[in-house]
Length: 260
Image (cartoon, rainbow, N blue to C red):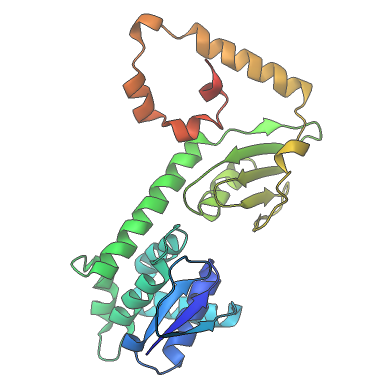
């Protein structure tokens, strides 16, 4: 009988499930990891609820970094940020390949490149998708100045990318208070001026409605839209190329994307 370890959809949650599943000594083939809230339920399986534990997660993270290297750790962390029903179990299987007894340190660090293995390939692909989306949002995020001086932005990403773009915007606007609200994943990045940034996992649903733009911001948006319209040459419009460079799913949250 298979034992399914259900965990929360966070890096700490997944790493805690890895720790508990490994420590259970039930055998790797007799356990399965699943993010809580998944639609699929397995017949004739025992389900165990895993509570995220920072100390357990830290031990798993440290082991991965020491045994499998920083590159593998980065890819596993990015894969854990993906919206995918099978990511937790795929990560566990990759760790089994790299951390099992008898695997040399050199071989452990090369596991992430064994793309012929379906679990390694899955983790690698998830990491690539998350990293690619985070890179694009570094260029597509648009801030609006509110009446209280806070910079506010809305995005709707497919994956949990806020932790990957936080340092980028904190370095660009170190003296600004700003928020990036991710409607797609339901979390929010908050940065304090001259301070640190952190992520709120469950912000209030009416967050966007309470945001009033400053008069200066409204004027700047009007000027920016006018500029975009003035440089446009109707006879040379190439909608296919525009969609390639600026997909529709990004345009809704960009000032110039709203220009008709």
